[in-house]
Image (cartoon, rainbow over all chains, first blue to last red; front, side):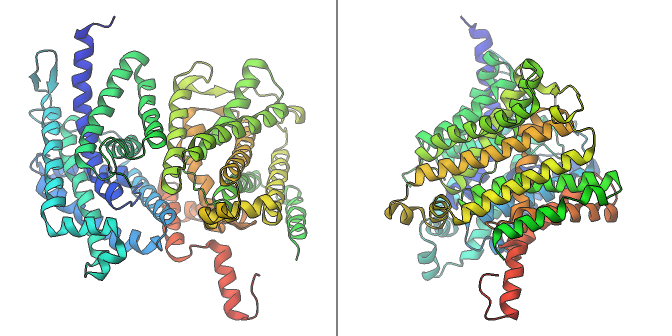
Length: 290
Length: 321
């Protein structure tokens, strides 16, 4: 019988890791879940955002949390440009082409980073990097607690955007019926690029919240790509609450799975969940019937 | 010119190369280009003719490679027998994955994601098992002899890989003319319509995945004999999956010679890139990525498609050149 004193901290730790997964996956929910753009470059763009936050700290001495107003618009611009001028043009209306183009983009970004910044793993030091918050059963580092709260805020903002604004309505209209959306006067290319940009902006936020407790290297995005897709599919395509929930489930699964199976096999649970969800419940936990 | 003649001419033109090429470097380069042409042909059969885009082709490559490496090391199996068993093992993996995936009707991007997830899952498992050597990897004992598939002369590998490329070409040419190939292409064009006229889409896709897996698995077996080393990153990492899909896309998806043309074009460009950009790590892969994006953007039919279009413009009467 496993001691609760081991299990509870593992669950708590899993929840905080899950919040980070959720943060990364929230942007993908919009890009992949709503608009079905299969963005393989998601992890590379996160890596780019992490480097942006890192250099703002290393060169200009800006705290990652204060860098949010710089990194978020930057990533939005990158995303908007990518979708408008590269992905949208190359897709020729076919899903396979989007897969290949985003794969190409990720190969470019990752290897450029490798060339420019070498494969070193870099971390930053902030006054609060090693502070902890006591939760009774376990001490959780402050950056992880902030990331947890950040995930909730980003999810709420996205939900508001989708339900309360004209842009959100336009995005949902596009997801349902592209031709119809064009007929009622929605600028399809622009709205697609806006969505992609907002999805990338979420990555900017994720990077700033992630950096104080994490590291950056050219390959840091790798581990996140499949996890992000898993979270989106598990939570239900296009559901922001689902992505949040999915992130927590994956985080806890990984952490508790690691407890039983060892660190490296614990990851296996993520892929098994991913495959099982796609096979048996493709609508996910909170998704609507396609 | 009939396909069989084209293939025979290609193999006949390539075969004497080791006798002509003096430098070890260029012989190894040509062998590697042919190797990726063969791996690309495996992907081409599934994606180019079947319309199923696998993003985790390393799953089959790695399974074949591990099958033969483990059998050789732990049971002392002969490498040629290991080669056949590797193809069988990878085909079995393909059939098992295909059964699950196609039974539940996953298509398009879902198929791509699931194959990627399977490859990653296998990588994690290979990383943690003792029998696969874990993260340290496996070292295959060196026994140079034709009987052990570890040719003392480098030209041996060249001819072996060339024979495999020839086999892949014949197989693909057969696909274009056979009933099975016709069914497969019907599924690619429109699965629902194909089913409506009585094509068993499930079995057709399953067979294509097993066939494609067998080719990739045998490529893995050859890789093990060439490099005598294997670890989970090489076997199941994304690198091999990307190599497998680049060659046919650059050369021309769903064409017989596309993967061969693509592999030589890509590796030629990579080589020029190395000369032009220096040996900096990553830069030649940046070139790959740029090429992939540009190809999809401006030449979605690959180099062969480009040739066909220009020919049609020049000679309005020519249709299928």
